[in-house]
Image (tube, rainbow, N blue to C red; front, side):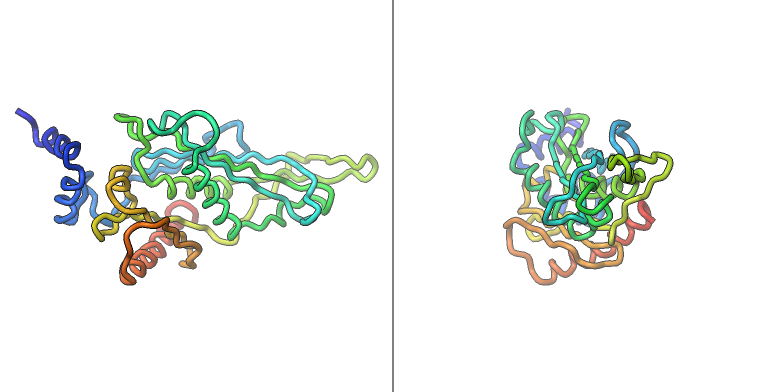
Length: 278
């Protein structure tokens, strides 16, 4: 005889939409969470010894790691007093059957563009300048989705929020050594004993919702995302400033749903800041 858990899993495999709907009608989700409840969130810092700064986020069974490496360059002619940064996001081949080795796929490229767009709102490249028109820092921000569920090796959904938090945590901990230009040799001199942390204008926190049959689900799993309409991601600062409302298609949302998503995201941004960044 099948156990209740085994029977539920069979129903989920055969009729996934009906299975999810039966839970949502009781204001609960298949994993036991309420509609507006996050999965367990864990932040670990300095996890990549070869990077200048790094952080790993585990959100449920989704694990994302960010590593930042700083190098010196000659500033671009158009921006002689600015440094630069580049963001690269990739899915590790072990995180999903759909992830393949090689160049980043379209989803990964979209994630890189999204992260880059948020950072341009909160990061001042001028602080990366060492000597105008002579030397500046460039930051290589590499983000990887490492693994998902231990059972099925599939990233467990909502990689966006985990990726954003890993990048911001890594930047918050990044310190750049002092560099001066020797007047006689015109060569850079590094003082590793003195360093300066980079700063952010504000702390962006992304909050992603799945949408299924008109119901918004905070921090959706991969299955909830697959069965529902296009996810909604709202990015707010720790003080509640709306930085981004992102959705690619999907079923129309009412004004009430949009307003509720934004207000909930503002509250969550403040909570996340207090718990992990204050």
